[in-house]
Length: 467
Image (spheres, helix red, strand yellow):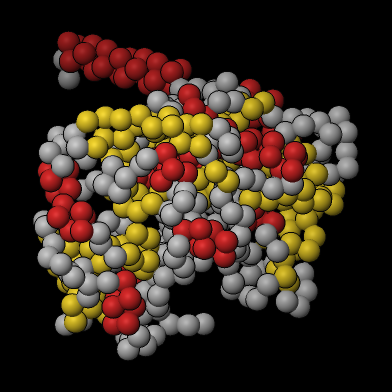
């Protein structure tokens, strides 16, 4: 090799080394965050009494590959007959012993133990929980404890670095890092009030309830759920925004439970065909499909067919955006609801009401049962106005308003789809739909003719087996 080529090769090696060093220098150093906050992160162990293989409240109806509640009981931990050990994480929010974790970590617990970073163990009292937010507030009898700093999750943006500390598989104070992948993510109908933070931070079972930090060393979220085909990390992790969690903490401390705001509307996504029928250029907004009789929205003058575009000045881009906004609004306050009706914007004053605290009362207020049917589909009759918008004939089709069953979710069904037939039988009402399903048994495949936008196709869904 000539001297010239040798010099060029040496220069190339030097440039690559310099670039590598520069890239390494640009990466954040997490050691300060870990040293400052590690002592305030705890390991949570809960002895729960429930049948083996059962899931905590709120986990039913999820697809089998969505290991949402990854602090679930671990079969290898068996304290006694009929008992299992749930392992999770938590963090200290006040020096007098208040600790935040996930509800699913301590659900049905007969005993909760908290282990600090200095190896001290405490029996914890469950002060209060909220399954809708998946939040639990614990209290241990201790003083002068290290605490975390609470940040503002509303300032998070996709691409920002975040750091998690927790106890995956019981390995306490494990540190992982990544970036925010998305904010305001909706994950289904069992937690409609939570606008999740999506990250690519490696999270596994046992991290549940642990803190998610920003680069300022402030907690911005509580690690809660993962998407996985194996039960382990696959790049999709979800955290509850700390603003949502602290709202729940304040209410639990004040009254022992959490109230969620409602205005009495059922909304659906604005599809391309619906947007076209309304002469709109985009599919942004939440379309009002039904009003609760005597509810706040009806009293405020909201109509079926209105398109909700903003709540208290915050844009509503999709139907999943509205529940978290309304849920966090103070009970009794007056909210400004911006709707589009006949192509013209209107602003309506709507008073926030408190959602009933139990499922039975909530179903009564909503005017329909939420249990669905053997497919886990909740459907409603289609109004004449909706039929006109969808281009349907009289007595044709039913509208899906909620998807609760895992098989239906895996098949891709979602709210806003229209079911035209069950097998070879046309259905034109919710009653007819439920009657058509009565002949199917667990293990049978049900063929549904489904319409979405301008596409109509048959989809086969297995009736889930009981057990």
